[in-house]
Length: 475
Image (cartoon, rainbow, N blue to C red; front, side, top):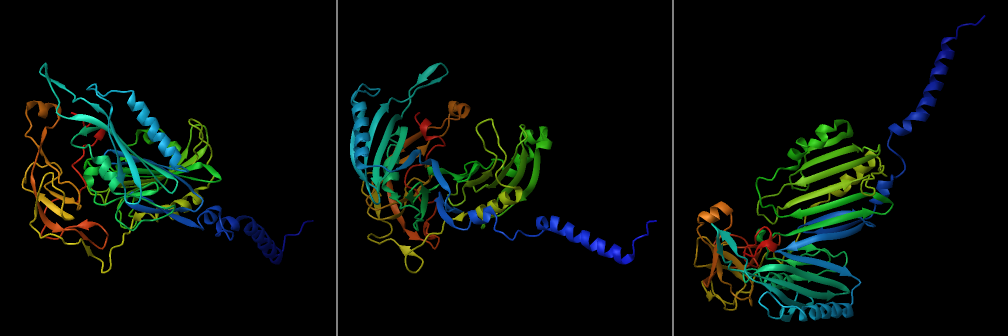
C-alpha cells in the first residue's frame, strides 16, 4: 500500500525542485556577472572626426572614408605614400597630357603650379578644356557660355597622399574651387581631433569659411575584428531640399516590409534626439529568405535646409552581412547589438571647436570698415564684404574673404525667359563689382566665423554658389 506523502515531504520536495529550476533558469534572467563580448569590445574607445561631427568607436575598429567632396572637389587620402610616388604620379599625368589636345586643338595641359595648403605644398594642374555645350531651342542651336576644365592637385604630408580633383568644372565660374579647397586644407595626424572649425575628411580638415553652397559630403565605413558580418556606416551631407522624406515616414511607407511582414520584427522605433540633434530611429531584426537572422538599425538626423551645422546625418549598424546574395547569421545577439548600438550612437555629436583666449577672437583690423575693393584687387582685410549689387546675386551679396585673396566678380541670375521656365535651366552673367568691408571676422564660442549685427545677409563663403551637381555645371 502506498501512503500519501506527508506535508513535510511535499514542502521539501517543492523546495528541491525550486532550487533545481532556479539553477537552470535564473542565470538567463539575472544580469550576466561576466563581461559580455560587447563590454570588452567597447572598453577602449577612440574618437573619430567625420564632417562636422565626432563619434566614438571601438579602439580596434577599422575605419575607411569615402565620397569626401566639397564644392565639387573630390578629396582622397592614401597612407604609406612616398615623395617618389607623388613625383611619379605627377610625371605620369604630365606625360599623358603631353600627347593630348583639348577641344580647341591646343595642348591639354594649360598650367602647373605649386599651391600652399595650411601645412604642406601641392602641385596643381589645369587641363582638358572643353568647349561650351550648346542647347537646342525651338530647333535653333543656342551656344553655351561656359567652358569646362579639369583640375588635379597632388600633396603629401607625413607619408599620406592627398589628392584633390574635379572634372569638367564650369570655367571660369568654378575654375578656382580646387585651389580654394587646397588653400584651406590642413593635414591631420592619426587620431587627431582638430580644434579649428571646418569639415573633417580622412586625415584632414577643410577649414572654414565654408557654407551650404559648397555641398559638403563624406561617408565613414566601420568594421570590427571578429565580426565580419557587422558593418557600421556614418554619412553626412548638406540638406538642400525641404521636401525630403524623413526616416520614420520612409519606414512607414516601405513596400518591402508591407509585402513581407513576417520577416521583420521591430525592436524599437520612433523619434530620438542624440546630443541635441533631433532625428528618428528604426531598430529591426530581420529574418532573411535563406533562414538566417540579422539586424538593421538606423538613426537619421534630418537636418536643416542649407545649414552647415545641421546637415543630414545618417548612422547605420547592420549584422548578417555575408557575400552579396548570401546573408549569414548575426554574430551578435539582439541584446549585444543593442548594447553596441547604444554605446556608439549616443556618442555622436557636433564637434566642439576652440577659440582664442577670451572666447572670441577678432581678425587683425588693418583697414577701416567701409573700405572699398574692386574686382581683381587683392583683399586688404579678412572679414565680411558686401557688393554694391543687392538683388539676384548668386550666393548672396554678403561674403567672407581672407586677406590676400583676389576680390571676385559677382554672378547675377537673369530673369527667366520661356525656355528657362520650361527647361528649368537658369541664366546668369558675371560682372565686375566693388566690394565694401562691412564687418571684421569674429570667431564665436562655437568656433564658427560670424558677423556682428552691423553685417547683414548670408554666411561665410570661400567662393561662388555651387550647383547641386558640379560635374554638370557646364552650360
